[in-house]
Length: 414
Image (cartoon, rainbow, N blue to C red; front, side, top):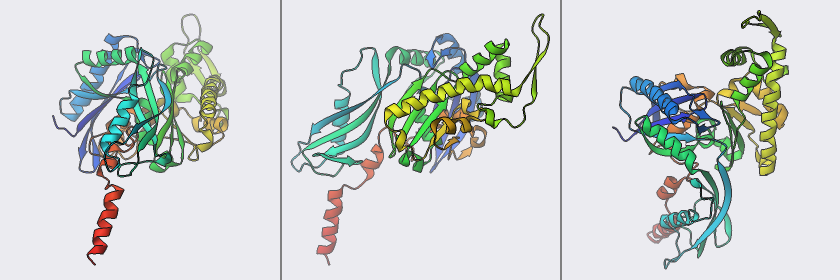
């Protein structure tokens, strides 16, 4: 199989989505995608390995048939309330004679982070450097080539339950594939739907799925905060089912076709006919009543997120506003409700810059996570741009010391 082929696998609570892509020169070519219903997850956690493996097999079969190639390795998105994140500061000393910082020093710094004390049942998923400090000079993005005796880093460390990750791997392996990499879902979604300026100025990405709502704050081109909530689209569907006494699938269909997240977004308050069950005859309700049921849960979700944004102390830095994505963001009136609750501008995020192939067919918030997973193709501009703070870019840059030496040699020759 070609090395420039990558497969993203989004294990959602309601569906599994697989996406196969190929790097073609400087762009990504979408070769195939597949979607399959999933009953094996609960709030982002694998609850039934057999059902999850079955959904993975079905989605992958569709994707590989469309792509016309066989796949062995997949990059999988991770979510769930088990996700924890902390900020940690560590340092190393620079021991080489000229005190110049090299890539090897950055590697040592990251290895040192891995030795931090953490709960026994958790493992580190990502180590994201927020900034570097060289001899007490902070705010440095790339210390390579600088001189100093002490190199420090402020890191955003994301941890995940070891058992949760093992169950994901077992499900993928039972379906016949290998897990090549595990990526936190809101980070993948951010790579997919956010513009560079948004990640620089400050944006809160809110990915509303079926079982979880994933939040990530991007500021100065770095992930500053992550959180996963166990409230999402399925809770809205269940509220409709309980309030109206209808089966779940009818509640889901009604939500998608007639539902609004905000009363002010209703265009025309028409009546909806609900098919009777058993001895109960057909009934009808106004769209405004359905919206009232939906808006209570959606407002509760946005208020939970808003409180977390305030506690993170980054809300006042969100100069680019809120970006809503995921299948739950397709609910009409979501943007209006978000702007009311958060008090800042909001928009819907769809996958950007997907290149050729079948890209037009996945330009929807539902594909935000899986599109971000394939955007980490080796050798592209997207490779680890957030997760490793531009490590590849650092390696390619000419150290500052070498620049000055070349300038000196140029003027000496004049």
